[in-house]
Image (cartoon, rainbow, N blue to C red; front, side, top):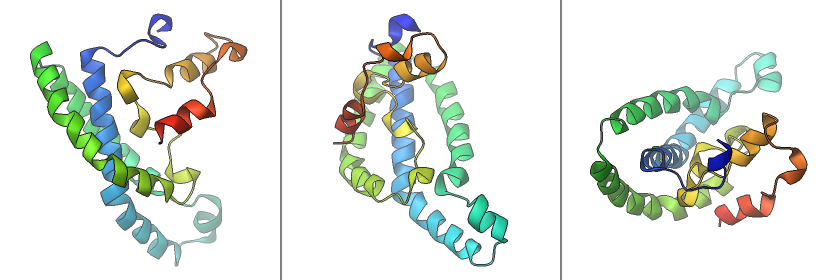
Length: 160
């Protein structure tokens, strides 16, 4: 893991993270608005403990589905040759680029941090790298906190 903290992802993981990003972006664009309305309607009659203590979020409602989709996609990726992985990446990268503008507008409008997953799937493998590896290693105590060089500017740069 230490060797990969700033290195490029291999083809399998490059495609895996591309699919994770596309899935999350499509959820935020197409599913979150309807789920948010359903949650709002539900909260009108929900018990107070749910309305004020553990309010459901769009992320709560979609995360398990995202994990199931990811597992299926990853198992399919495992059957692909290097050439198939390259072809898939060439086909899907432009699709992601086409939705990025709409996604960024929708992302900015998410109602709260509760709708966002910190270091969420929408950023995994961005530009062929996984920026969260350093944070993961820091949280696991593999590298000390004072050597962490990723800043909020790095994350904000991804969002623009």
